[in-house]
Image 1 (cartoon, rainbow, N blue to C red):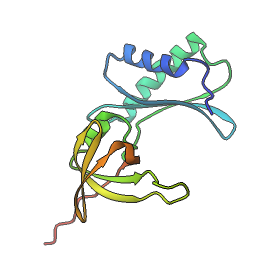
Image 2: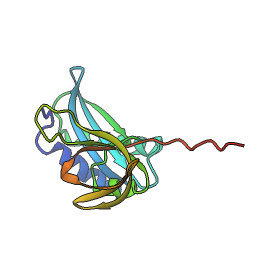
Image 3: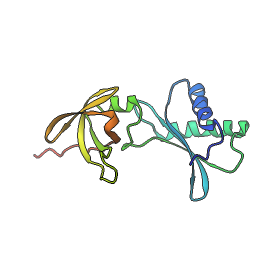
Length: 162
C-alpha cells in the first residue's frame, strides 16, 4: 500500500539528482507507514559508499526543500540512509559492483505453494538477462527472471594461521 501523495517520490529523486549534481545515486525512495507514523525513507549510494555526513547533508537539504514545497500534507518522519552492506541487488550497478563477491540468491518457486530455493554463491559475471554464479558444485548460469531476490552477503576476511 502506497502512502505517498502523487509524484512525491519522483519529485524527491529529481530534487536530489538536481541539487547534488550526481554526487549521490538514488537507490530507493519509499513512503510507508511504520507504527502508525508516516515515514519517508530515502536510500542514497555512491561507489565508495555512504557515510553519516552524506546522509546528514542530503537530509538537511531535503528537509528544507520538503518544507518549502509542502508536498506532504500530514506529519511525517524523514530518514536518509545507505541501503546497507547486505542490500538487495535492485539496479544493474548493484549487480556489477558485486561481481566476484558472495551473494545470497532466492529463486522463484516453480510451483505454487512450494518453498523458494535459497543458496549462497559468488557472482562471477553479470549480463542484463542473466548471471553466472560459482556454487559449491561449480559454475551455474541463472536467468534474472528466475531470481526472486539477490542480496549481498557480508564476508569477513579469513584469519591467517601463523
